[in-house]
Length: 113
Image 1 (cartoon, rainbow, N blue to C red):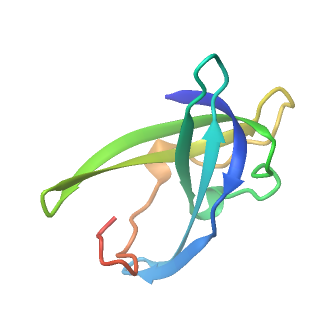
Image 2: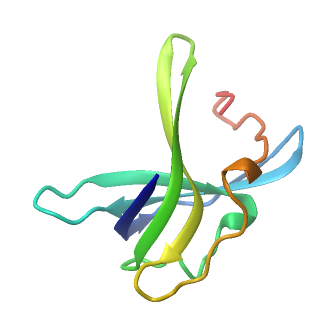
């Protein structure tokens, strides 16, 4: 799936160590345009994080996957970006694709995702 939206907020970088080594995750909030703008929290993992693209106010073209998982009777939905470009500026592309996401270990809150 693909979305073009304006970056409105950058959340703190999260890092940790899992069974496959070190990992890092950057979450950010984008807002769509239109009569009824929507805010979406999107995450990007590992070496796909590009600080030069993730600047407040940038319009981003984001390729992403949506996935829901059940844990202890509750459902959790993730929006994971696998490619980000600065919209309209011919921005750089994050390396990799949806098959290059890698495995992630448990985070400090005890959830396995």
